[in-house]
Amino acid sequence: MSAILTVDDLRVSFATEDGVVNAVDGVSFDLAAGEVLAIVGESGCGKSVTAQTLTGLTRAPNARITGSVNYRGREINGLNDNQLRDVRGEQIAMVFQDPMSALNPVYRVGDQIVEMIRAHRDVSKKEAHAKTVELLRSVGIPNPERRARLYPHEFSGGMRQRVMIAMALALEPDVLIADEPTTALDVTIQAQILQLIDRLNRERDLAVIIITHDLGVVAEVADRVLVMYAGQVVEDATLDEIFYAPKHPYTWGLLGSLARLDQPRTARLTQIPGAPPSLLAPPPGCRFAPRCSHVFDRCAEPPPLEARTGGSHLDRCWLDAEVKAHHGVRVGAPPTRRVEGVQHG
Ligand SMILES: Nc1ncnc2c1ncn2[C@@H]1O[C@H](COP(=O)(O)OP(=O)(O)OP(=O)(O)O)[C@@H](O)[C@H]1O
Ligand SMILES: [Mg+2]
Image (cartoon, rainbow, N blue to C red; front, side, top):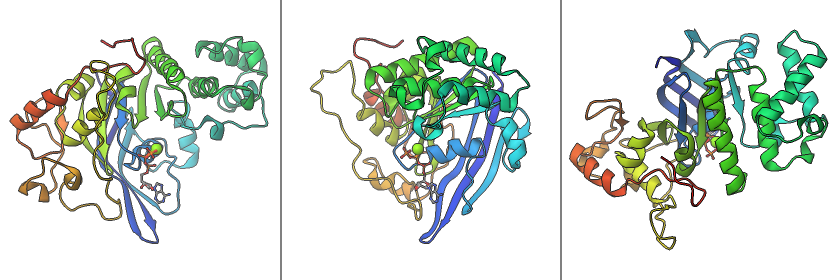
């Protein structure tokens, strides 16, 4: 599979009164056509800033961006507003965590999608309306002709998230970036939205970047997973590698805090002790070291992200390959669906 999106050494920092916040600190990855990549990590690790920077939405005057975001051979980092308008929506579309913030409350939902299509395509109102109804139907909104005439507040949370996805698909992008698309929803609705993303990925060969703090969500849909910690990628591997042979102690911690179907309900979930470091002054060596129960001398030196045992499974940890293999198997678990009774794979 060849990459349609290549991110190389992306760095985003914000100048603040307290100093420079290095929100994204050297992130690199490829996204292949039709691939579902998940970016996982605790709050504040730089997931949203990474996602927003991919579509040129990191616009704060105090932001400094370096590195490369290459979409099908075209450099996106550094494009002006006009050039970005073509990329955004047409090639790479985004779905945000809070759909209310992206919908205009005073316009009917259908009209908002019609306007968006007409801003980019030379089509009549009637054609744009037909396309809108078809889009709403394709994301599982019942009775789309009638629903298109409703206002955003007349939709439930799950239906509103479907509207956002319909809007994101309106210009037939190759890449959909979904930033925490399910966090605000209850578990059953979350599962439905993830099934929708999964179906769109298969039917349209849509490449998806899904951002979440929840490894359970990842198990539902991802082909590959980037685990982020304190602005950096600490592990980059396939879904199966992350669940069956995880190599980074932080990933072990995330897996330990996941509710599992292969254990009794009463089994206690372990939380990772401590809190992520400040991005103003992260620890000089391994950034996870202060919270890591496997820490040793070498961790005073920052570990690079690399494939330590060949292959494409990358991790950023000095521990011995054998220790990682031994421990990874112990904490590893089959990817389990969040909805009880439905087992994945
Ligand atoms: N405009 C800004 N100015 C200063 N700091 C910022 C700015 N935008 C983001 N940050 C900081 O960048 C860091 C990364 O934020 P980001 O929103 O990417 O985290 P996240 O991983 O998406 O977290 P969450 O899971 O809570 O959504 C945070 O420390 C945040 O405070
Ligand atoms: Mg975020």
